[in-house]
Image (cartoon, rainbow, N blue to C red):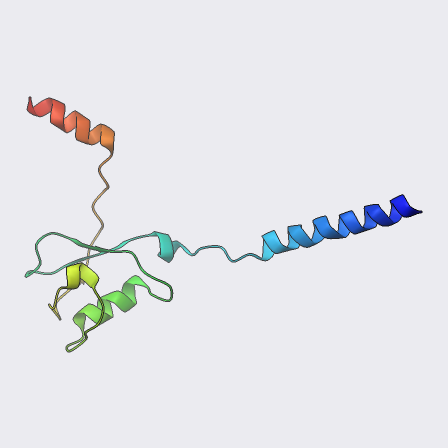
Length: 105
């Protein structure tokens, strides 16, 4: 009888843990995918990792709204208006960097 009760308690514990794992929030793609923007007055591509509650669209809106202050997007740039979303540059891998260095010699 005692072993049946022990198994029931163990099974309930395993079931509870499985439920917790299933119900855990999964990170959204926007939290892991960078947003990239360009501006004629900004050198290069501005790459921003959205924070909690942010999207690429909300960041672009911020960059294009006159008078917005307080965020440090794009190196703290004060440029407002005329920002556009652009494809993000492909990250360079160490192998590609090494291959490029070898070709230069």
